[in-house]
Image (cartoon, rainbow, N blue to C red):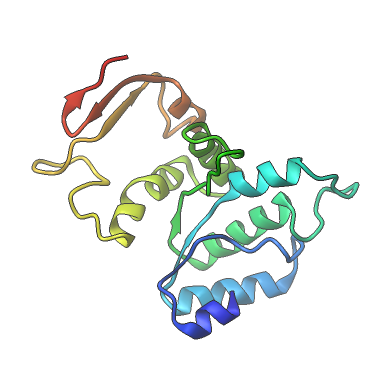
Length: 174
């Protein structure tokens, strides 16, 4: 992370996972990321998926683990770093689509509100990638919409209960 920051990157495609939860270095690194004006794509679902493929220590908090990645997200969130929901889905794990739903759950478990997790998957991401025609609902914008059963601002798992989808303003067949 420090090498990338020294090089002047605009964004980081993963959180770090090599610092154990509670390590004060995480807070210092998060402050450095914030001061540089860098966004971070979270990829917690990726760390969870690859961690599940390996045996963890008894406390499930070894460096390089999903717990280490979640601690990094907490530190970044507390520092005010823009967080973008992303999974780094591969052909193997995490699954495309379902991985993002899990990412939103993991973001709320790491301390983001449901509203902040939803923003990380929509408007915050659109803004940082210069996609001015999407990421929010407003006249004249690209109408990519997902209607869910339930209220994802109260229960983030409601994003997995998809009722209808519109792409570019056209309702999609089930």
